[in-house]
Image (cartoon, rainbow, N blue to C red; front, top):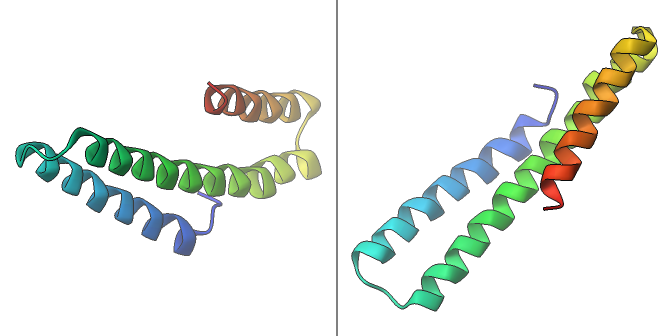
Length: 90
C-alpha cells in the first residue's frame, strides 16, 4: 500500500471504535437520531481514510505506471481510479 499508514491506520481504528460504540448504543436502545449521527460520523472517517488510500495509489502506483509502464498498464490504472471515483459518488 502506497498510502501514508500513519494517517490511514488511526482513522480506521477510530472508525472501528465508533462501530463498537454504535453497536453498544443499539444494545442499550439509545435514541435513533443519536445512533444515526454516529453512523454518519463513522462513514465520514471511512471516506477520509479511503481518500487517503486513493491519494497514495495515485501518487504511487499510478505515477509509477506512467513513469515506466506500458500504455495498457497506464489505461488500466486510470480505469481502476475511475471505478473507485464512481463508487464514491453514489
